[in-house]
Image 1: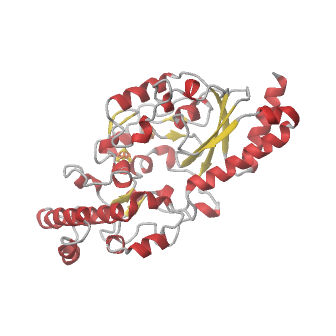
Image 2: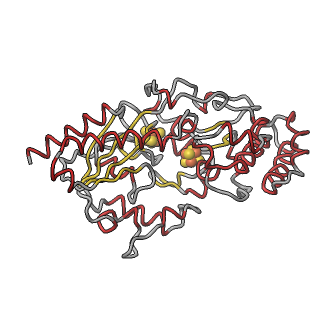
Image 3: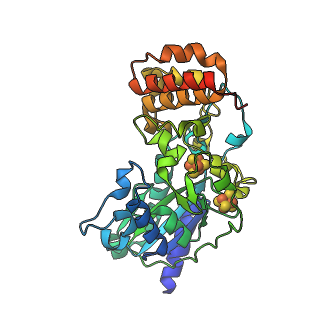
Length: 361
Ligand code: SF4
Ligand code: SF4
């Protein structure tokens, strides 16, 4: 037991040296939140994110059944790094010519790689410290988003933060601008205590969500969430949702921007999280007209690639429709005949909306 305490403390120290602000350990357990994940999937609230529904050999949902999916895992090391930078919040900008890319995607490097590199550094130090047969016997796997577990549930039980009513992990000191990474390990480490819920009576995130995607506290319907729709959804977005999308062109930060715990969130100095030029509050005209080559160049190694060029252009066109700025009319007329059918259809909708709606700004 004493040795496990020492190894646990070594791991946390190694995480700090690798650049993580927070690190904790969760045991492997059938936490109650995993039942809610199962219910969420069963209710169809994951939209088209089929990877969420992957099943293990026993037919159980992988992400909710770590114990049966990877029976050798004894402890989950959860690490978190702050990606907030000293830039405005989406709710503080209102230039109708410009859109909003989610804060997490501005960085120089795709966060998956930035976090994975650090996790591997921690794993390497752990292997080095164990030595001898313990290293040979050690099983460990590092994951960022792709592991067979619901990361935020383990983050809660590792003491990183509580799961807020907006479904994000929130830390009392750092807020919710956190990238999470996990190391699944066969080591029996000393678990941390779960972080207490500090949302209290606040409902700001639920009240601010423009598409009513937070259907109840702690419950997100991805089918209505701008973050899911602008990034993961490939085809046309339902028309009744489009007005609520406002200026969001990749992801959505609203339910985090309004959270009081984020108002004093510190900014990170990590070079890889500093914004690429032009991505904070980008010009809609630029995004709607971005060429294949420019998209490849500008977003090489960026999280924005996930939306694909077609999705990003579609989103920019919808944002033009929501802008109330009639200077977009000639461009939308042109885009109505775009070779990309989804863009053309969105332009048709956006042009009509511009003519029919009073400007929101
Ligand atoms: S990300 Fe945006 S759309 Fe999704 S729940 Fe938060 S505020 Fe609503
Ligand atoms: S806005 Fe309020 S209710 Fe929502 S996550 Fe933040 S503290 Fe919790």
